Image 1: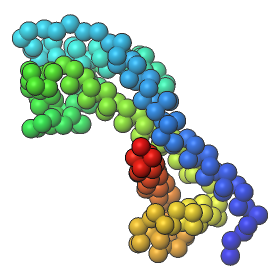
Image 2 (image 1 turned 120 degrees about the horizontal axis):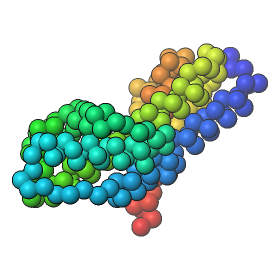
Image 3 (image 1 turned 135 degrees about the horizontal axis):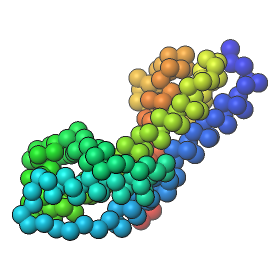
Image 4 (image 1 turned 90 degrees about the vertical axis):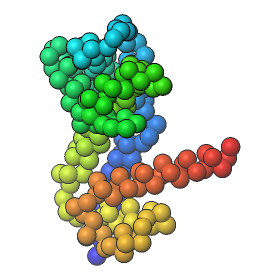
Length: 206
C-alpha cells in the first residue's frame, strides 16, 4: 500500500529532476557555452596537413573548449589536451567511411567535408555529448541514488501513471517495485519520448 504522506516529496523530486534535464536547460547550460567557445577558436591551415600539425590543432581546440566552454572549466596541459583530443577521435569519431583517429586525419584532407571545420565540429558535438552525460549522471546520483526504497518506489509509480500512454507495453506491465533500481533508465526513456512529442507538436503547429 502506498504511503501517500510521502507523495509530495516524490512529486517534488520528479519535478526537480525533469527541470535539470530539460532540453532547453541543457542547451543553455552546456551546448550554448561550448558552441560559443568553438566559434571563438582560431587556427592556421597548414598545407600539406601532417599528423604533427593535426594533433597540434585538435589539441589546441580541446584546450580552448575545456578552458572557455565547460560549466566546470578545466585548464589542461599541452600534453593532456592532445591526449584528450586523440582519445575523443579514436573512441568516438565517425567519418563517412571509417571511424577513429586515422579516419579523422583522412577526413581533414577531404575537400568535400571542409577538412578541419568538419573535424572540429565533430569534436564539438562529442564534447557536448560527454558533458551532457556527466551532467545527467550527476543529476541522477544527487537526486535519486541516495533516496530510500519507498520514495524511489513512489517515484516509479508516479512516472508509470503519468506517462503510461507514451511507454512501451512491456514497461507498462511492470509493477513499480521492478523499476526502483532502474529509475535513470526509465527517466531517460521518458525524456526521449518527451522530446519526440514536443518535436511532433512543433512540426504540427508549423
